[in-house]
Each structure stands twice: as structure tokens, then as C-alpha cells.
Image 1 (cartoon, rainbow, N blue to C red):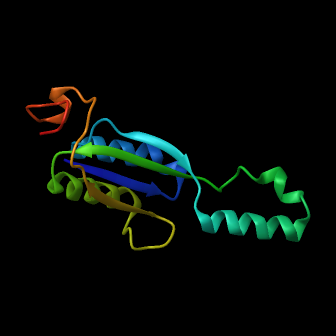
Image 2 (tube, rainbow, N blue to C red):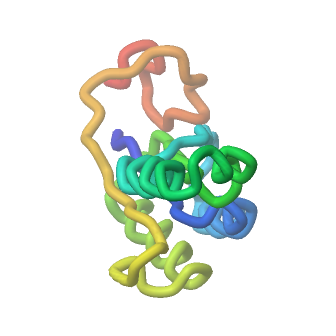
Length: 124
């Protein structure tokens, strides 16, 4: 088992990326709204330059989406990345996002058919 994670830079592309992941075979994606350090720094710098005027616009364009899902194999991660790049372009380009996997030693709470394992309570 692996945790597939993506920080999507452009939140307006969320539906497209979710569709791409679903088409690649990823299911059970959880999405969080998130913000990166550089965006916070830029917002603070803009705030000091305009002395509060930027607060009128503080919610526009500052957020990311963080997606995560449990997947069965590195091959599924590769398929999800290929599908993501078909939507966003090369992830090495600025302002696209980052995708990575983390090995999962154990998990609890997934139904057997979703986990793809014999023992859904431990992932073994």
C-alpha cells in the first residue's frame, strides 16, 4: 500500500485532476484546502505595501488543494502522474504541483474491496 499525495497549485484545475486520477484507477481521494509558505510570505509582503488594502483580496489566488489517496502499487502512481501531466503539463514546470508517494505499513478503516487486501483492518 502507498499514500499518493499531490499539492495542486491551481485550485481551478481540481475537477480536471480528480477526473484524470479516477480514469487512471485512483479512488477514494480526499481533498484539503492548503496554502504554501511562499504564498503566505507574498501575501504578507503585499499587505505591508498596501497597508491593509490587500485584505480585501486575501482569499483570491492564495490556496492550493492537497489530494491524497491510498493506492495498491507504484504502477498506479505512475498512471496517476501521467494522467495528471496530460491535464496540467510537465509537473517540473512552475505553478503546476508536486506528486509523491509514501509507503504505508499499516492502515485501518478501509473496506476490503477498496483496500485490495485480505485483512482490511491491518493492511496485511
